[in-house]
Picture 1 (cartoon, helix red, strand yellow):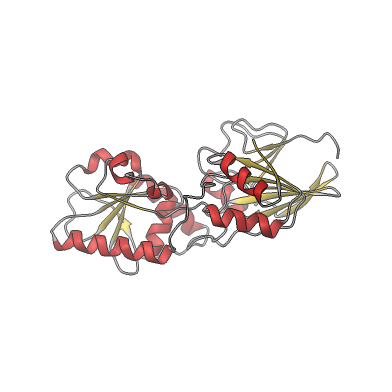
Picture 2 (tube, rainbow, N blue to C red):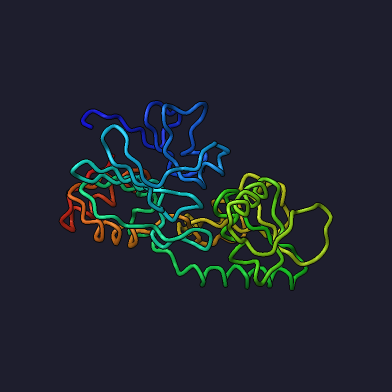
Length: 290
């Protein structure tokens, strides 16, 4: 219906609001409005009631929730009313080990996240990076040292656990552990791991949030993030290594998404929104950074 206001990832929801995923920089704070649109998994991770509808109608509009491939439950919002508008939220076209690939609907208007929307961000294959992490961990063990992986508590920590648990012993910091448990309650198999406990001997890798970095002074530490592609990333993070594993799309994947969606208008948001819009305009799309 003309004039309907839809709030996209608002901090303080009101009216009709959409929460794309459960990361704290997108999740609502305080009571939600008349209707919160979110997937079942996002609701579960945030502790919100309700099942989460994949498709429904409201205010004369048709709404569909599509997988975004970012973390468990991450979603895109598709709104249809004679034309189609899509908001991707944080999106990973390739998906990961704990979430499926992002869906790509044809649309007229696209609001596209551009976190890694610069040509310098081209991620290596995930399997290659996981092998590099395993090799680094084994080198640490051979030197009698315990490797520590710094990864966001929600999303990245679970992805690493699933990707590394087949060949390494994994111990998980308590901050991330609660999200491991919620993932498993939602049906995701993370493989073999155990909670980290002070004083435990043996060769194992600790997965812990970046905010705990200071606790691990004296241990070999590695930051696991898409920002590892930036020059001198390890030194900038104050760690020994940096591995480029991201739950966002890289530059080529963002371009691929747009080519498949064929929108008439693309609005880019976050990160390298200006650079991505410039490239899209060079490719014949009408694009404006917000």
